[in-house]
Length: 180
Image (cartoon, rainbow, N blue to C red; front, side, top):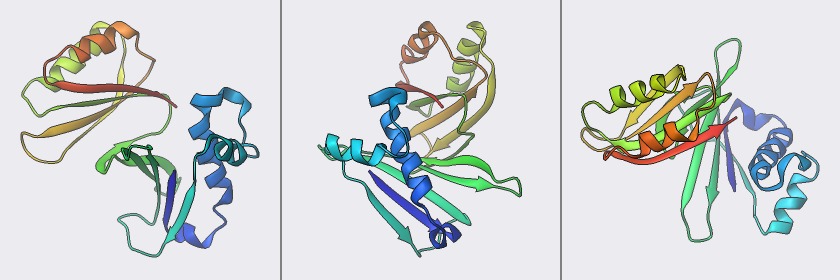
């Protein structure tokens, strides 16, 4: 796990946030038995290395935190977050190097799909058919006609048939759900 801090946060004690990230990483593996105190030791026992960097490079945000998970075969997944506004509301601002804007709470669906006409309508119709409401939507494409990452914030957790319906579309490459 690589954790990188940018901006004013580098001048603060980042240990509490680093431990919280470690705990969050382990929650799906160990359940609720993991806490901020035992998380670093549990990761070490599992053979997971944690590298923390405080960068002086500039970023688009006053403070930015990036967490990368690097698999043993080299695959990398990442998420970047910041605090927005005077109220310092948390925001996810990038997933796997793609710019998005999502609130890190509740249920998120991440859909990677081809940039084709009608995909947003298909997803919206499918979600409405299953009585789930979209609270927010963020789309991020790298090039016209390429691949798009759509992040949906939902008011409730969708049932498996909804996810299967979205996955069945020929333009959809991947569907993931994140309950935060």
